[in-house]
Length: 130
Image (cartoon, helix red, strand yellow):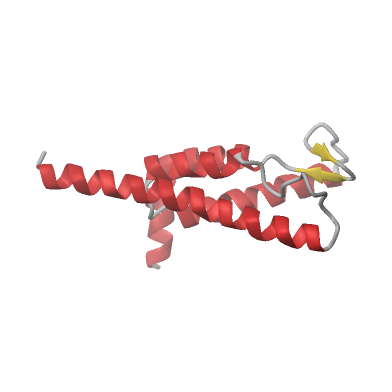
């Protein structure tokens, strides 16, 4: 291994951690502000838990910057599908109850998608080349 490759890998990992954290942190700031303006969220509540940005930061550090958009996209799609199926089947234990609203724990879908990307990342990136 050359020293230049190790420094490059460390920088990619740091950039992945920083971007992973900042993406969800900015989304949290934006949607918390919007939901507070529309009175759908109380003053002491947050739109996204603080664990989700930390988790995506850790995922970005491990997986790198290039897979972050795919991880966020596929985790969101899987979360929406699971939410829709659970709502249609009236499964109550799937949701977190926050006030009058049902919340879905997004971290589980981030972990699931990260595992899927570790296994299938070459096939997913092949689809982008088509």
